[in-house]
Length: 135
Image (tube, rainbow, N blue to C red):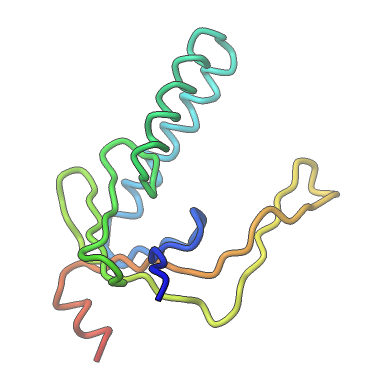
């Protein structure tokens, strides 16, 4: 039997069922986007951002946001611990019934396929909400 890691791709759907957590994650993503846009105007910042992104990918992180991590509870399990700003939330990785194609565009005229998404990570408020969803 060949061991397969639970995450097939680096692209998945993140479903947040915790009130307020979605807003915090959107704010963090906006900060990263703003810093990348500022870095594109300044060549010195671009080289610094590239070195920090390379360090993040070598650690096998699923999310590249400051203060946000996600780690499996045990090897081969679909249960995860989702950490954001010091708080820990239970999460479950589920397979979607069929792959979803993700398309990108730069001009809203021509679209190109960039990835297939086959999994979703559902983040629950607490373990009791996770148990209710399993029942």
